[in-house]
Amino acid sequence: MGKYQLDAKGKVAVTKFHEKQTPAKFDKKQQLEKIRADYLKKKQKQTDN
Image 1 (cartoon, one colour):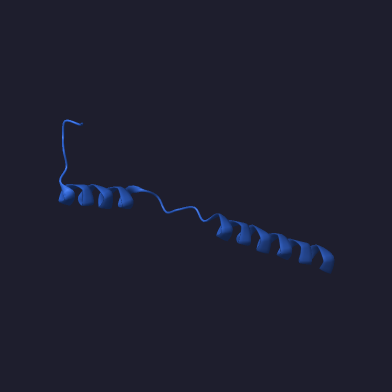
Image 2: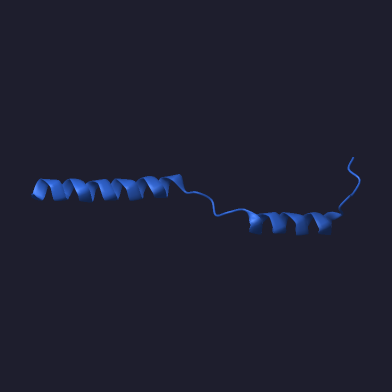
């Protein structure tokens, strides 16, 4: 057991704090969709020329 024990209210406060501190989640699907769209645009430009 740790030196400092948190009650339920304290635990909620700690989790809220950590949620705010974590950076925004990296959305892999969204990133892949963006890369795919860029690739298709580039490919379309190449075929036009």
